[in-house]
Length: 495
Ligand SMILES: [Fe+2]
Image: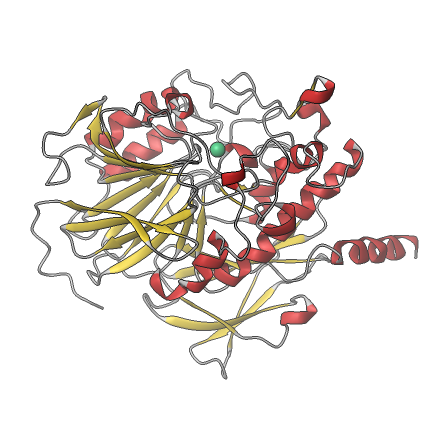
């Protein structure tokens, strides 16, 4: 009885934070969809009912994966639906759900078959935090630049993506998800009520819950493909400073469950098992005429380099361990993955990693990442490399070893680089140095005071457009098209 009553108390406390089931989808191989959602209780057998008609959910997918971690108020349920047709809309309903969604039927569309040359768009964000009263809103603590808060009534990036659901097939979020590790910074700055360090674990989890609640408006119907960023690592934001009291906190304040990417590992099931990758950290997938690759710039760089947030790395987040025990596992995988791409089927290869290899703000560049990844990205003629980490937008030139491709965007040999960390979070945008790198082509920073997301449009096998879309009004503030001279496979069809 004692156990039951304490569970009830925990659930009641948790319900103050979580109002929905945080449904989120992820592509899985060429015939699968991973359905993930959260519940207050452990679920013996999570079930997804699914079918081609919302009135006939005659199929059932189940699993025994209902997992939690210390300090979490919820369980993460993961169920894979397999045997699906490509590019097809299915209806689904997980069970059990939180009470308020139990009557709804949701839907998703599966990935386009590799080789399908139908044009499509993808939404990309990096550094997207919780919106509203726990994150980015119309006010912030005193040190936050006045240009970085939202104007009253201003649409934020999560709302912008929700209103643009018809414009993209899936959402790619290459790290820095929710910014729950800002809990102490937000308290010190007087934005959130003060708690003790011990009570802070609940604040951290409440920010995570708020984020996934907000994202469900997008991620219940659009696959949400994610990668690791430094703000997933632990609870102390790389060393939160209380300047007034001359205190710098370190990760010893983090409780079990709030270190070593634990929340990130629990919340997602990215398709690494079907692409030879590792966990939610690195993996690849095909979608239509594109091969997409997610890299891990935080851990496991290999070749003698310790990832920036690993114990002993340049940012030294205590308690972060490599995620793969094999030496040089990530680059060995990356080379094999890129070498195996059939460019007649997926002519485009697009790579995302959290930290930039090139940026006018040189302090945000990850030189170790550049050392290990760039030779492979260049060798295998990757078309586009996306990043964030710095809270700015900068479109760069096609580059290799710092040298600009003489062709620019007109059939370059070198990969094209774009950094967009301007999606928005509690303290907003960063400043770029006024003197930009010669390879910088267009940039926005805190002085432009504009949050936005990236829309990638694959027109055919030769033309790809990147746009920076302002969240507040949908205006395209920057647009550039990459041309690659290649013959589109006549055998490929619109399916
Ligand atoms: Fe970051």
